[in-house]
Image (cartoon, rainbow, N blue to C red; front, side, top):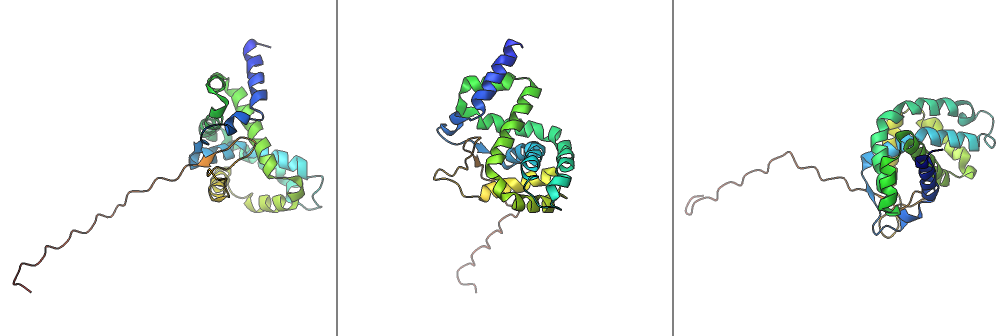
Length: 204
């Protein structure tokens, strides 16, 4: 194994818990598009992981045991387009680990970085999807399955932006703390109506 691969594995192990991210002075701000891309990219791994963990406990006729693998494969088609945004989001989340770690991530081979991002995102989702909620997860997946992966990524961004945050306004989890950037205010396309001139003195 090359020295670069050894360094990459060491970095992956260090980032597996990402404690440095939580120590950042201010939680990183992900745009809605960045979070959506990260969620879309991670979705096949999440579906595969949930299917594996829940199949043994779900009743006969549940959705995931019979459809989870095919659904993960279908969602996988959206991963290449989602990768640039997912990479940007991951580098933001990793900023608290220090400049050396971020510099190494930036030069890590694409395949290795993609695998790392997918693994950590799946682990993060696993914390939020406990096996005792498999019935609920199965029902939600059944209802959301007809949607494209990109739509589910966008929906998750909305859910996170509306979810309960800590006192600093940041969501938290295994991938550290982060927040969804406020959407920019759109400039009004309607020009203000000009004021009518005041009537001259002595005229009605």
